[in-house]
Image 1 (cartoon, rainbow, N blue to C red):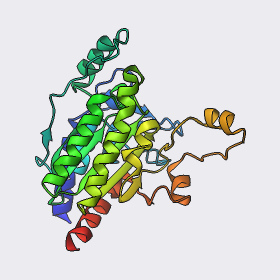
Image 2: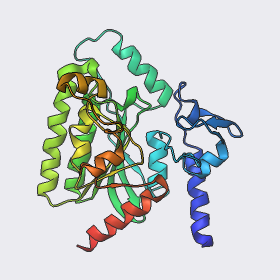
Image 3: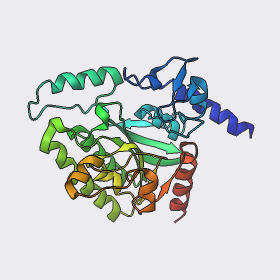
Image 4: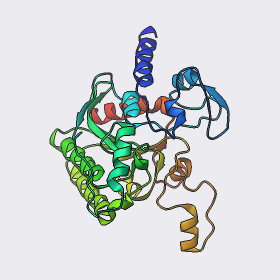
Length: 288
C-alpha cells in the first residue's frame, strides 16, 4: 500500500508541474491555493483537491480538460515518454489570412508546434506508441501536421510492433487548411487499415470533446474505443443535424454514455481508473 501511495505522490508531482498555458483556460493555469469553479455544477473546488482528484470534480464527476503534456504525465510511467516528430511545423497552403499569426500565438502560449504530441512510452511497463491531441491548441483541430504525425505514429507502431494508443480531444478538421485538412481523414484511416492487417492493437480514448473529422476518422476506428464520462462525442452540432434531417434529437445523444448504449463506444471509464484499465487490456493482449 505504501508503495502505491509513493508512486501516486510522484505522479501527482509530475502532473502538478505540467500545466496548460492557454490564457483563457483559468482552470488549468491557476496558482496553488486558489479555488476553481466547476463548469458543470458550479461548485468551488480547492485547487490542490482538484489536482489530487486528477482534475475531476469531486462533487459531480465533471472531467476537466487536460493538456497533451498533462495527459502524458497522467497515463505513462515516469521518464518513459520519448517524443517523436516534434519539429513538424504548420504551413499555410491556402494563404489563409492571418493563419500563420494565429498558429504562432498558440505555439507561444502552449509551447507546442501543433495540436498533437506523440512518441513511445510505457504504461505499467508495457511499451506503447502513444499520441495525444491537445484541445488547448486551436481546439485540437486536425490540419496537415496533425494528420502527418498521427500517420507517422501509426507507421512507427507497425514498424516496432507496438500497441497504439491515441487520446482524442478535437473540434475536427482545421478549416484554415481546407481540403488539405480533410485529406487527413482518409490518410490516417488508411494507415490504421495497415495497422489492423499487421494484427496490432489500437486503443482509442475519446475525451471531451471529440468531434468533426477526428471522430469521423481515427478516433472511431479503435479495436477498443474508450471514453471518459460525459465526453461530447459526435460529428456535427445538434442544431445542424436537426436542421439537416428535420427531426428532433434526444437530449444527451452525443454524450459518451449514449454512444456506449448505441455501440459506438465500448466502455466509459473514469479518469482515475483509466491507466489500470488500459494496462489490463495491454496485459491481456500481450498474453494472446
